[in-house]
Image (cartoon, rainbow, N blue to C red; front, side, top):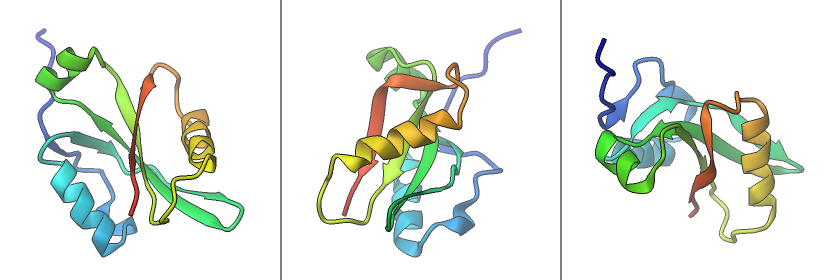
Length: 111
């Protein structure tokens, strides 16, 4: 059986409803380049709140960057990029199978 090719878009079970209108705009823009696979959840570190989701690169991009698995993407509405953002990625990864996500690539979108 031939393997299915990944194309840009949004998985039918991706929950756009849990994101703000600005985040939805960002996600829709990203979905023209990436395939959004899982809507993830929010992660709280102290009083800070971050949203993460998973995305898979389409075939051409995946081959170019040698990435076969999903990538953790974090949305941040804060003005500064602080070291605790690395903790957000680590916390998101802990809840996922190691074979599901890339360990060498992360995507951050801040304000």
